[in-house]
Amino acid sequence: MPSSPKLFYARPSSYSRRSTVLNLFILIGISGFIFGFVAISRQALGYKCKYSKPLSVSVTWDTSSSSGSISSSSTEGQKRYKVMGFVGIQTGFGSSGRRLALRQTWFPSDHHGLQRLEESTGLVFRFVIGRTSDKSKMSALRKEVAEYDDFVLLDIEEEYSKLPYKTLAFFKAAYALYDSDFYVKADDDIYLRPDRLSLLLAKERPHSQTYLGCMKKGPVFTDPKLKWYEPLAHLLGKEYFLHAYGPIYALSADVVSSLVALKNNSFRMFSNEDVTIGSWMLAMNVNFEHNQKLCAAECTPSSIAVWDIPKCSGLCNPEKKMLELHRKDICSKSSTLPSDDNV
Image 1 (cartoon, helix red, strand yellow):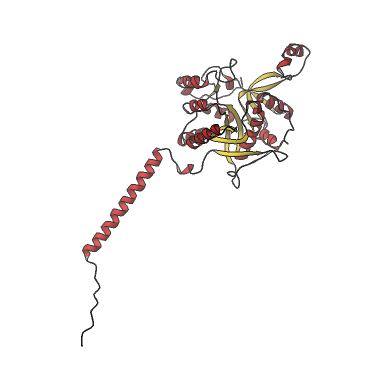
Image 2 (cartoon, one colour):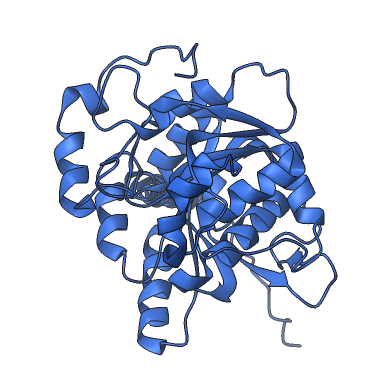
């Protein structure tokens, strides 16, 4: 009777076990090397886990509601970020050169640099721009947003004649995104010292409703055709009102919350944005705080914003002048001095 076949089960030898363990260690080592290389490479390129979410955001000014609310998919279900100040750098489609000059000077061009600036000052900085029907310009903007990711995009037409509407939309959007002590409107053609602006905004103030800027007197009659009437109006005692120069000014949180609550078209829009805001502040009876350091004609140890006043509303040749100022130590590297006065 034939014997049944015998079944043999191979036992792994000690050499095979050692080989398996060795291969496992090699695999772990290679994986660790790849992971470390990728992590170092991403850090060198400026990537941070903190920035997994984009900084740029699109917001819509809903004109169908009575108060003009802000809607954005990025803000739904999220609480507002708490900061000391939100600085919106107003810019346009013809200002790509200005933005480039800013990113080469006081406005960091990378996330890591922007994070350091925001952490050291308590201020958030974003470019603010509307939309246009020009497809090529919108395409260029999308590319710039993808490269730098430092925008707030307003769903409102970007036109010089509609700057008052854009400004109101900006304050409403900024208030929806950030729980800030101050909201700062600044133009893209001024040289700014963020550290000194931070000190100015951090000061204790007796008034919760504050309108802060470099103030000037403006006539009630803003129509150029009525310029001849200004001397006569002054002699007759016609009331003039103060308002801040347009290149930079700040509104406290209480003031902006009142603007957000305004019904659309409840206040008059003037042709000039700075005059419009000034007239609203007069109507709201807020505290006007004048500070000459916000309209300095040259860099000094205490200047906050530098522009070519009164020759230009901003720097006359910002793309060139911005770089020239930044190369001066008095502009970019001088010590930050406390801002104790408003003169």
